[in-house]
Length: 381
Image (cartoon, rainbow, N blue to C red):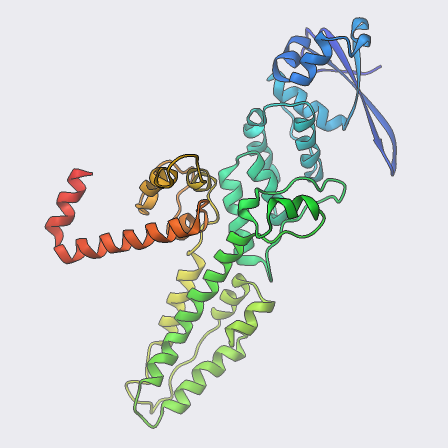
């Protein structure tokens, strides 16, 4: 038989049989170090040391599993030559194997980061990558996927998976609209991601406010040319398929809408008054630029820092309160701005809103007190 030597001095042969409904059985043989398996897995500790696997005495143990996936996790736990030849659906089977044998998932974080860098191209759906990037604690990958979904997805954002055979894995209930009980009961249903959909809704709100500003300025004007200017501006937005935004948003992604805004070219009529001759192009370009760079995706580090902890309510959040200096966000594995923190907040909403309100009050008080007060506070912090 052909044996794959995970280590050169292996003292145990694992024979892995892979079965499938639509393919003939496949078998793989791996030479491994028994002590390593015992060290990394309680399952192997109980089975190899105990009486369960009597066949171990012959130096061979039979397992059921995916052959390629088994080679991957064996190489990771033995810290030998790593391979990254897993197809995307097989990543979910790797998660199954990790749970089945009680392996420490953190051992696989670096491996997954390398796999993600090699495979996270356009053929992979961001909605299907959400769970793996969260499970393997890949902060940049999770942020990339959540940002892509907020900007490119049409309609409500839901969790997806590449195979119907594996349906038991979901993002934490705190990120979802449904409770943990409903998730376990209706495991096949699409799960809406509450915080991510809220971030997408915020992008729409910021865009609407910016596009509505010229209309509001015109409505305050007292001139005879206001009707032509107001109609002309909104009609031009309509012709490039941006207006009315509430309707367009239902069938087009934020990215698509921003791409359409790149074609905006409206100018006020030549004989329009000063009030009607706004810099429409500049105002639209400014809000488009703001929206395009507004959200950096969800941050796993902010989610971790802000999740409720035991003890006094104030203790749940004091560490995360330090992250509100948005110019430099210490402790996060990628640079992001306030919206990412806001929508990555994992605690009680009323506490988050209270902190934001308190922060704004402090900033307002410092501005009113003048620069001397700000300087003294920075020196004391």
